[in-house]
Image (cartoon, rainbow, N blue to C red; front, top):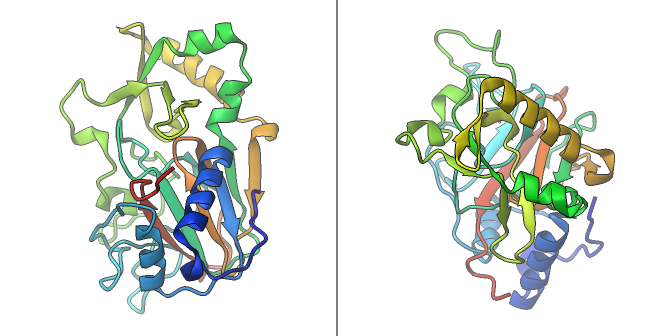
Length: 283
């Protein structure tokens, strides 16, 4: 994991220090800072120094901090979930999964309450592509992928629902499924808008189709491409793993990386998630 040894409070960072940190996020895919003490508003204030923030009014967005999404298995006094995702294992995904385009390409995760049995994993979509021989790179450049809403896309929801309380996936607009036909696709290989490096956008939970040189693939061909991508990307040499401890904050680029999470055992575990872009960073 790409740790920053300095324990300097985030709110004391100068503009040049934030720019240097942003460069590390783009270059390495993610960084982790330790022993931070943030209120919701301080977390939001710091993220806004990077760029424009995503803001929503879903059940997991506190009324006093709509830019923050609570990630937790906790429930309130009425037994309702207060956070997204719950306790189950999360499949490999990016923030914005199921979207063919999105602006908030950075995610920060700040640990409010820890669970030492839960492991967070990150895999580099840029390093795996860089290591491919040129002919394999050219092969993957021929593809577009089609993205859509998938009911069990991030983790299995069977058995987690009741008629009164649907899973969070059904309460959150996840992206491309509501667009007109034809716009829910994007290149499998793209160039990052900051550093220009190519990366594979293997949208594991929501890849429902693919095109090669503009020709739509059969279901069997899509399955074969899926298996190819899985073998290329998910190798241990491209992965790093982290156990969140209270006060940790992880910042990751959602184009250069993909991530997942093991199940939660301690239901009070809580992260504050924000999503934003690089628009205020003068690289």
